[in-house]
Amino acid sequence: MARVTGTEGGRPVRQVTRGVLALAPRQFWGAGETVVRTALFLAAALAVVVTIAIFLALVVDTVPFFARVSPVDFYAGTVWSPDIRGIYGVLPLVAGTLIIAGAGCLIGIPLGLAAAVFLREYAPARVREVLKPVLEILAGIPTIVYGLFALLAIAPVLQTWFGASFFNGANAILVIGIMIIPMVSSLSEDALTAVPIDLRDGALALGATHFEATRRVVLPAALSGVVASFILAFSRAVGETMIVLIVAGQNTDLTLNVFGQMTTMAGWIAKRATGDVAVGETVYLAMFAVGVTLFLITLVLNLISDYLRTRFREEYD
Image (tube, rainbow, N blue to C red; front, side):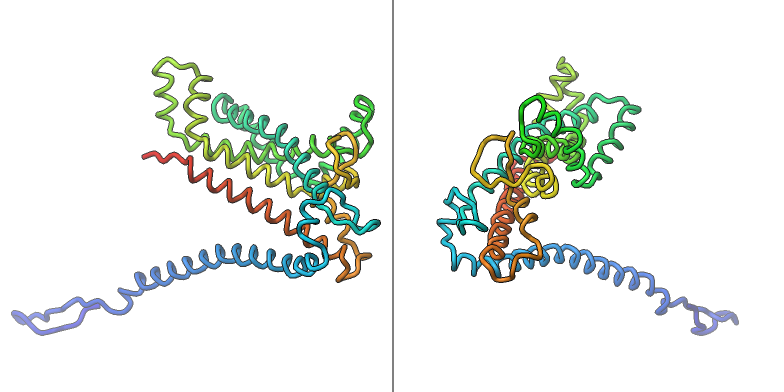
């Protein structure tokens, strides 16, 4: 904005001054950045608040349960028969959860890591363009569809070849193993991609084969991200519900026989969380005690994942 301040040689002298409008854009963007920063903080805080709220909601009904059932009997007991015998020993459910999730990871983790290495290090562009969308589709399939697939395609084969019961733990193990492949593959591929190309080129220049460079240079450099993907996949398998509920059966005995019926903590909660359980009954409260146990297991797994990612993370300039 200009205004006349005097005359010089008969001509008016104009002085340019900054008005409010000249400063408006800078002030506007400063305010906009504050709004965005606040919105992002609230979004992050919301996740923390929701997690705490879920935990407190579980604890509210878990405390009365442990007033009726000893925590020692609950966590050390080997018999789970709340409806018939009124015995609440959660070890059979914990064992079933760890067996199904652990065996599923023994299938899914190697396949997922192999897929990630192939896609990142070996696959031509055209092959990658086909395989990555297929893996993404596999990740988006609802778990109940996996369960139906197991009933139609896996259960009859196991029943015929291995003499398994139609509903058995091996059904859940195989399908959960397939289900976690995309998670391991995606996270591991991101970790491998973060490794600088100079490390690969340096290994190849020193005479290493492509496989040796991948195994002895790239994978160790991406170790933190790869191991974190393993633990997150195991955490996902531990919390799986619908697959176990549909195909694993409802046996709550402590057993290692994966060809017989088994169940998990999440599967038992899904089975009992129906309208025929009266609020305040011990069985009702037991669902929350099992839920807290499952919550704590997944929390510990996620904390381990964060620790390993921080402990073994490599930083490159």
